[in-house]
Length: 427
Ligand SMILES: C[S@@+](CC[C@H](N)C(=O)[O-])C[C@H]1O[C@@H](n2cnc3c(N)ncnc32)[C@H](O)[C@@H]1O
Image 1 (cartoon, protein in one colour):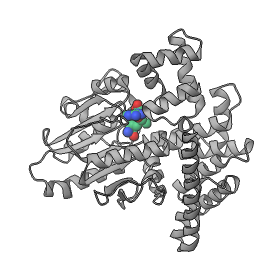
Image 2 (cartoon, protein in one colour):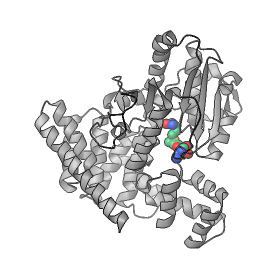
Image 3 (tube, helix red, strand yellow):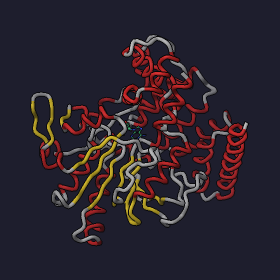
Image 4 (spheres, protein in one colour):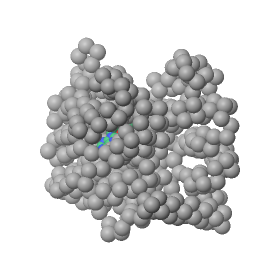
């Protein structure tokens, strides 16, 4: 199984700790069953020899979760940026937008709807949308969606841009025709090689599945694909991946947007610019939708949810994985309850304290969040993400000395880790 995880990491950058080894294992087992193979080595050999089967496994293991106008604020900022700045500075030019990963199309189509709503005619903008999963890209091209794709604050966009046919909502031809879908792997050296650069890039909810070095590689690529004044949008949990030598945060809460810093600067993977998740706004934006609010179970229902889900005992890793998934989808209440349940059984779990800290911060409780990050560091003194949050918190309080102390600790940890990696790769 480790060899299959390593192959997935090499091919699509999937860090199995981000989705959980158990999830990867379940996907592999499903594919092995379909291929009627019951031996890991034989399946690995098939993967190494069949591009089709590798693609099938990628389709099985990737997380396609998405919906129209996810997070809303990025789309609002996009509309303002284009109408108030971009159009004035770029009269007559075609606006170029990239959505990667685009999953089943809700994100690039939301972009197309918003651009059309601010009066940009078809032909005045071009949206390229890329995802690694061929199955998902084909679904996106059809432009037909179920109710589950409308979980955001889409307002009356569904009524204006879709036609209801039986249980499905079909997107109108004008919006559909303004997005060019293709299958592609953001990690490939030739990814979008030779394409024009983009005025706006949406790369949301991808970096969270990658390890640090893959995140750096992808950010460097996006930097090269963005115009000097372009806008990059990341997912709400991905601010910590960004290095300010390369991108600087746009101070607009809930949008998670970045401009390029000096275009020629080389990207360094030091960890000195975490951006705290701008929390209260995220939550507010999400609970505005009544359907989502109804979907958040109360904390004391969570245990029941576990046992009805699967009958085996949940491991620490499984619980955290599930909590992360819910946090990623904006279900902070459920994600927090899962972390608390995890801590009841695994009181030593630095990861649970850390994730709970991120969630409390996202809910606007930075004092509690800070305590939780302290606990994470107490349990795991090398927990660099918790240390970064502590540094940011100290600095916000004006305690620059403590902030510098935490950052120095992070640097030491990273230096030791890098040395260990280079020793182990030499030996
Ligand atoms: C959670 S969805 C994000 C969709 C959308 N950006 C959003 O935020 O709603 C993640 C997508 O990443 C795609 N993906 C994973 N690894 C990829 C890679 N190396 N290159 C391109 N797409 C990838 C998956 O197929 C999946 O559809």
